[in-house]
Length: 442
Image 1 (cartoon, rainbow, N blue to C red):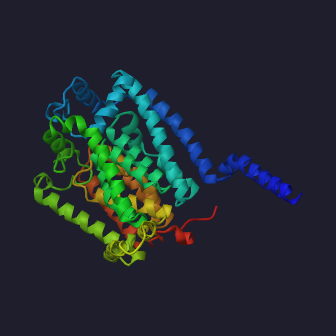
Image 2: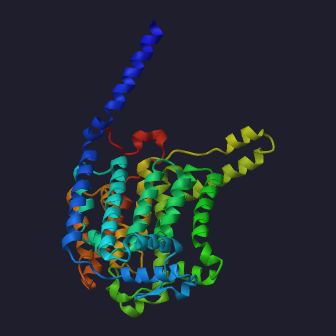
Image 3: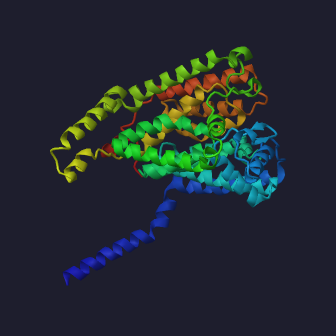
C-alpha cells in the first residue's frame, strides 16, 4: 500500500504545481507589470496609428524595389527606388514582398502590421529583461517611453525595426542555450539589414565559451547557409552586383542626417581617414572589453583563446589512443552560460559599435534603444543618474534636425555609459556558479 500512496502523493504535488503556474506568473511582479505595459502600449500604438499622420520616407522606395524583384529583375544594380538603389540583403526583399502582398501597397494596413510587429518585439524584449532580472520592475516602463521608436515602427515603417525584432528573437533563443537555432535567426536578421553584424564579435566570443570548436563551426555554417539560400537567385545571376551592393561596408552617409557626429566638419566626416580611425577605435574597444571584462574569469581573452587552442590540440593528439566514444567525450567542452552574461556581452558589444559608428541616422536608434535600460542598470551609477542619461539620449534623438550641440551631447552621454560599463564588476559567465551571476532570488 505504501507505493500507491507515494505515487498518489507525487501526482497531487505535480497537479498543484501545474495548476498554480498562472498564479506564479502573476505573483512575479515584474512579469505581471511587463504584461500590463504590453497591453497599455498596444492601446498607445493603436492611437498613434489612428491619429498621428504617417511620415513618407522609405516605404514607397521599398515597394518600388520589391516590385522590380517581383517583376523578375535579379540584377541588384537595377533594383532602385525614390531614395536610390537597393542596399539591403535578399531577406529584405522577401519580407517586404510578403508585406506588399498582405497590404496591397497600402500605408494604413502596413502601419497596422508594423504595430503588431512593435508589440511582438516589445514582448520579446520584456522576456529577455524578466529572464535576466537586472532591472527593478518599475524600470521596465522605460522601454515604452520612446517617442522616436514608436515613430520608427508605425509612422515610418523602416526595415531596421524588423531586423531588430529578429535580433531580439535570436537573443531570446540563445538564453535557452539553443545556439544553432539562435544563429539561424541571427543570420535572418542580418539578411534584413547588416547593422545586426555589430553583435557578431560578442556573439562569436560567447559561442567559443559555450561550445567546442566543432559546434561553433557547425553553428556558423548554419548561419552562412541561410545567407546563401536567401541570396541564391541573385548569386546565380549577378553575384558581383549582389555582394557589392547588399554587403557594402564602405558606404558614405550624408552628413546632414548624422545624429552623432554632426559637429565634425563635412570634409573630415566623409574622409577615409576618419572612417579608418573610428574602425581602429572600435576594434581596440572590443578587444579591451573582451580581454579585461568579458573574459576576466578566464584569465583574459588571449589566455582564453590559448586554452581553446590547447584543448583542440590535445583532442587531436589523443584521438588515436581513445575509442570513438571516448574521443567525443574528450571533445565535449560545452558549457552553460549565465543568461545575464549573454545579454550583457551582446548588448555591450553592440553599444561599442554604436559609439564608434561614423553616422547614426534617426532610424538607427532602434539598433540599441532597447538595450539602454539594461546597460544603464549594469553600470555602478545611482538610479537618478541612470534616468538622466536615458532621458538625455532620448532627447538627443528627438531633436530634428540634429545640430552641433545635440551631437556633442549624444557622444558625451554615450561615453559616460561606456565608462560605466567599464567600471561595472563583470558577472561570472557560467551557470556552475549561478549565485555569482548577479541574479536576485525570486
